[in-house]
Image (cartoon, rainbow, N blue to C red; front, side, top):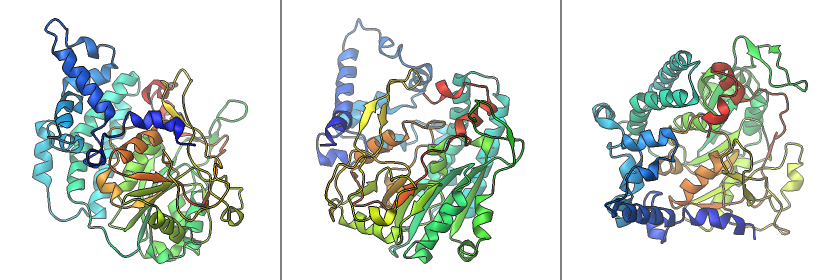
Length: 455
């Protein structure tokens, strides 16, 4: 019953057949309707072709004019001669310079961790310089500066990376993506992840640590003010100096990308960076940096994935709060993420907003049950997900909307989404007075700029 409300949303994105659905996340009812509308509109000799785009945001109009959106090639997708992924990766949408750069830099060997970190740190340094130059510009200017820098540097590199990804191993290894923003719970999360893993020797973490190191401010306090605070605790150093973590850090189980607070682009882009630290592990897991764990959470997650009735399953939900007794929760059905609604806030543009997980099932089953959406804070999949549905480098500063976008892309790429049979992790949901990344965006540019920027 929980799928009914979501059906209308995914119907717009779902394909006409499974064969179309699996060719790259493009074909679907929405695309056919749009292509027919475009064809019908363009057939009229008296119709102004610019009229249908004048109500679009200026940045979308600009991208259309620069042939950097695939919408003008939907007829090819409809005819089946091209998939969306082929169009995006063909080089036509990044300009001659970007395509030439990708060809020039192509190598057969996978990128090393050193190569990856060197490039990402260089990109972040350029981004920081760009942010300083554009501190007093409008949100249009901030987006344009990010877009132009990404088209010139990050996107061509990303295409090179995707052509040189490591070979996936079949050794039971797990890659755990963890992104942390000024989070004091991060060290405990890593310690408990390894301490309660059934196979900690097969667990590898990609940590993107976004910290304030100087002139730090608190989050918004109860009196609606902020105060000066000490620099953030270093999650990596605290974990690696602990009795649990020292061994795993020395053996290379933690891969780290450091980011300054001022460089934060939101959780989605942090997960993009973390995805590049994957090194061929068999399974991909994604969590937040403020979690608790049930014993053997890693093996149980994989067992659920194997039990799911699909060739390309994803297990995901909003875990219960960190105060939950996970041992007791393991004997009952897990809450499922099934309740979307259209946002009503004036600053959310009526996006589909996902509500909390609820206990729809009275009986715990051995087989995971279907769900319409994924949650970013707990997600388990075959690691080919990183190759087939790679994170998009053109989604900076978003918070709400991350999960509905990823759900749609997974579904249109042939993946089926399931809820876990029982809860394996807990989540710190209420973090009052703690720093939030949009507050850093306001300090980097101007107060209130994030509201229009993330829309």
